[in-house]
Image (tube, rainbow, N blue to C red; front, top):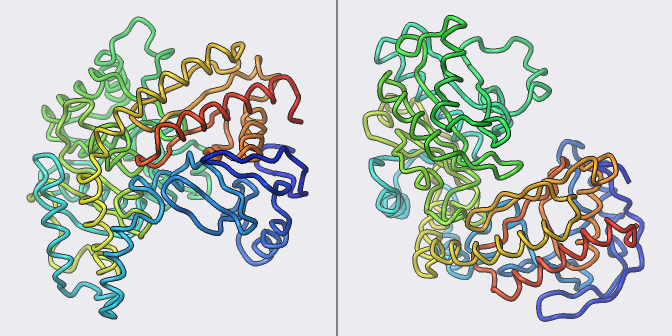
Length: 461
């Protein structure tokens, strides 16, 4: 097995039956390869690379295949199912819309659209006053990019520069990818936008003796030495709530220094909350950890509990920059999405999921500390806040390729009834539904520890 390629040949594994896991067949289950082969033949390979499992149904924090195997889900289908897979209230809300036959209404008004937007603005922290809805996170980022540049034009900026951070991720459409990812992900574009400026992420090992605030100021000073002047050349700064692939959070003083710099230079501060919003990190939105108030922020993933829904939220004067009909999308604010979005907010509040994310996050962090201490240095570090975490593996301690080691751990966990987020890098991410039972969370972390130990000592491969 190499990174990104998993053997689909069914392997005989230990059968498991617990309150939260069931493995009763070979893994991958017989028939998995047949279905994946159909996808190989008919779908672009860019959509592939995940674990060799075929989902058949899902409930709360459990995933099932057709053979009846059951996994504890530590992916939330990549941080979408914050309210749990197949949340009953969300399904009922969507079903009510379906029963009316009104699956779509384009940009025409509907009662559910008005109700949802009113509740969404109430749910969001000040100074949010308005929102615009879309269907994917990358679409929301494109809209935020447009708003930042429109604001720059309005305020008389000579250039429409946007500052972003190396290694942050914002999506796969052109502006979103220009604003994030590594150089290899931008090669296809040919000419790069000279007014998109990247600065380094404030990792602990990059900070050294510097404070987060000084690290930010030094990064901006480097831009200015290159001839970029904040007051006339920059209109926006975009920060991911945490850096996605490794769940790395910023020092609070870094973000606060960034907010002060934006205010001093008439620059919009924008956050990408697509992975981190709706309770995932123990706050409604991740920027609340840093005690700042962004001018606008992007949402998606957990916003619709599995129904495609995203949005940009912000101050009214920014959100109303586009003229009537100038910024919309075919599927934006459709009745099903709005019903799911409204039910999602109600469920987050009813189940007290923000506070639950904090409480369960303490369990997660406690157990990850144990895993790290028992890993023989293979886990070089981990990051965790609320119910998102990442384990980072060390190349040397893992025998030369931490990415290969992480893939093997992911596969061993799959064989043992646990599904984690495979990144294809030297990390494994963890993000269970916020509704996960404490016992299932602890059991899943125990399985992960056993998978790491098995791979470390070669018993699993």
